Image 1: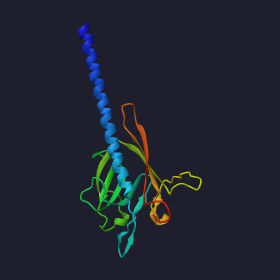
Image 2: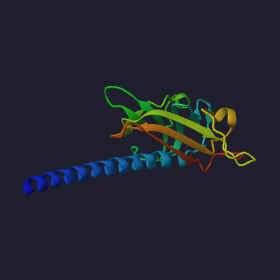
Image 3: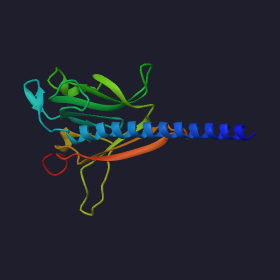
Image 4: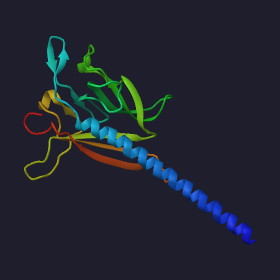
Length: 189
């Protein structure tokens, strides 16, 4: 009877350790993916790209995705300027929040839909929502908008907020973080 009790206790301890390790692995993956998003958004660049005979800066902030130009996308092939998009993806080839990249000097870069070469960063994540802020008001409050159009504002946002849900053993867990855009805000972007 004592041996049975000890064996049951050991099985419970091993199971608890395995669950703890799985939670730690999931948290580490989440932090790594958030780091990729943060580094990419912080490197958003207002540099104009060729559009026909003209040039145009590229940053399109929508509620369900964001697309922008960055010098050196994290985890992208090669180096140099890249178009980057973050969006929610569902389908047979994977569900979650994805990152897509494309070269900026391709035809139609100004209307790139963000569906270039992509990979899932947050497997199983959903309920994605982006919001954008021009920076603090005179009173110090941050106001958030569900979209950002560079052509209308003339500059990049001062910050981007990303909200989403990730799966967890106890059910979906809401996650949100704010990324400052160093060249955004102010009067010149």
